[in-house]
Image 1 (cartoon, rainbow over the protein chains, first blue to last red):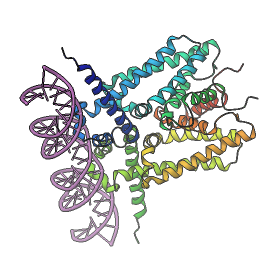
Image 2: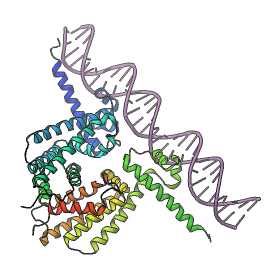
Image 3: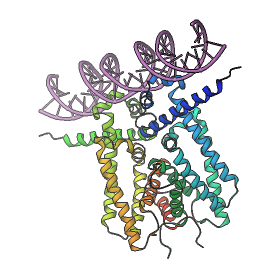
Length: 203
Length: 203
DNA sequence: TAACCTACCAAACACTTGTTAGGGAAGATG
DNA sequence: CATCTTCCCTAACAAGTGTTTGGTAGGTTA
C-alpha cells in the first residue's frame, strides 16, 4: 500500500487546474482556433510538447474547461431552482447567480459565449447542447410562471424576452473585469432594475 | 478611348460583391480563423488560388466586409442622429435601425460581434475602434440627454445601461434569421418595450 | 483573323499547426 | 545506496495553412 500517494495526486491535480486556468485565459482572449498550443505553453512557462504530459489534446483542454464551468454553474442554478421561490424572486436569483458565475469563471464564460455555436455540432461537446436545453427550460418556465401569476406582463413574447435576457447576461463576460468598480451583485441589481422596471420614467 | 469598359467594371464589381457575400457567410458560421480560403472557394465553386485574382488576401476580404457594413450602418445612424429627435425617440430609432441592419447584414454583424475584440488591436482595423468611439458617444449622449430631460430614470448607471443595450441589440445577430417569423421592426418593438417599460407588471 | 483581356485552374511554395517519441534532471522511495 | 516516478525538454512528424506562379479556355476588341 502506497503511503504518500495522495499528496502527489492532489499536487498533480492542482498543476492541472493551474494550466487549465492559463489556457482558459488565452482561449478567451484570442479565441480557441486562433490560440496555438505554443502560446498556451508560453504563458505557462513551458514548451508546447510538455503540455501533452498533462493533457491528451488541445481539444480536451477546452472540454475540461467548459465541463468544470458548467458543473459549477448548475450547482448554483439547481440550488436556486430547488428553493421554489416565486417567479420574480427566481428570476432575480438566477440573474444574480449568473453574474456571480461570470465573476468566478470570466474566461470560461467568454469561451462558451464565443465558441458554443460551433462546438455543439460536435458529439464530443454534446453536453453543451444538454446544458442549453436545461438552461432554456429553466428560464422559459420561470418567465411563463410569472406571466401566469400576473407578475410579468403578458403582452411580451416570452421566447424573445428569454433570448434578450439570456444574451445580455452572458455577454457581460466580454467587458466585465473582476476587481473592477462594480461587484457582481451591483451589476445584477442594475440589470434587474432595467429589465424589470424599464429605463423610462413612469408617468 | 475604350467604348465598353464600364459594363465590365460593374460586372467585376458585382462578382466581387458576390464573393464577399459568400465569404461573409462562411466567416460568420465558422469564425474567421477557423475558415480556410479553400472553404470559401468551395462555397463559391472555385479553387482557393482563384480567389487571389479578386482579392489581395484573406484579411483584405474581412476588411472589405466590415468596412462596407459599417459604411451602411453609419448611413442609417447619421440620418437618425441628424433628425434631432427627442431622447426617447432617438433611442427608439437607433434600436430599430440596428435591427434593420442586422436584417440586411446578418453575417457581417455576426463577424463584427465575434472578432471585433481581437481585430481592433491591429492597425489595419483601426476604423473599428473609430466606429466604436462614435457608437459609444451617440448612445451615451442620448441616454444622458434623456436623464437630463427627465424621460429616463436618473438612478441608473448610464454606462452600464449603455453596455446592456448595446450588447443585447447586436447579439441578436447570432440567433436572428431573415425571413423568420419576426420582422426587424417587430423585434425592435418588443425589445424597446422591455427596455423602456420593463417586464414587470406595474402595481 | 489576330491580338488581347478576363476569370479561372493546376501545382507548387514556405510556413505553421497539433501531436509524438525518446531522453534526462531532480526529487521521492525502498 | 540504487531505483522509480514526476515533469519537463529536444527534435521531429505529417497535415493543413495562406499565397504565388505560370498557364489556358473563351469571349471581346481592333
